[in-house]
Image (spheres, helix red, strand yellow):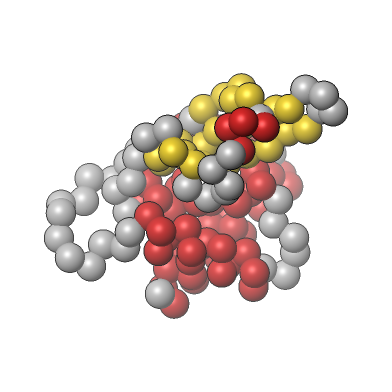
Length: 126
């Protein structure tokens, strides 16, 4: 589990640096281009719950507040690294206007509350 938390922490740093020095389209391109790794079925591959838990713990230890876009991009990359078909979703609520990002696998929200789809309308998936 420590290795997963460390990998998650490094992804948070990478995404933060990217967000500091580039624009949203660069982050979008990074996530969109990262393919799901083809990992043969064998024991020892962490489940999506373990991967999301590792990212949650990395966010707790991160020195700054981790925003939803950074967390969702990092979670998507981590899940894809371990063969999960994750998709980052960016959505909005119109009145009052709010934007939010989360991760889905096969249409199910994996790193947020399951009712998030009732609150936010998806605008972009990558």
